[in-house]
Length: 73
Image 1 (cartoon, rainbow, N blue to C red):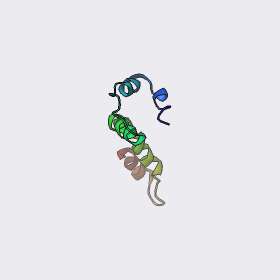
Image 2: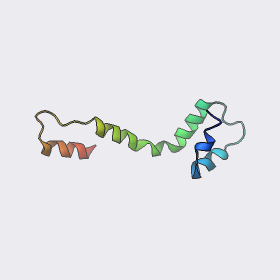
Image 3: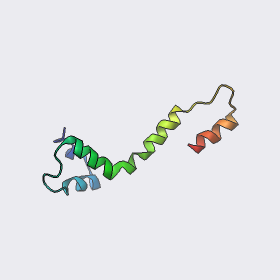
Image 4: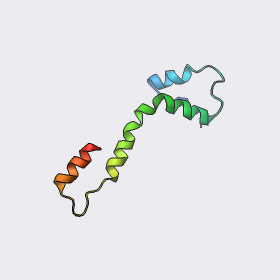
């Protein structure tokens, strides 16, 4: 899997990967940790989408009450 990872990168992510000093990444786990440390800010919104998808309007909740709660997330 590590051998295919670089081929999946483009642009800045590819440059980021190829600028690592030789031998600085010793396992896929350390590669994932380094990558997530660099690009975790790009994943942040996924949590918001997950929260929005999990929201439901309550049985007795009016739409007027639900919409502001939805927008708040």
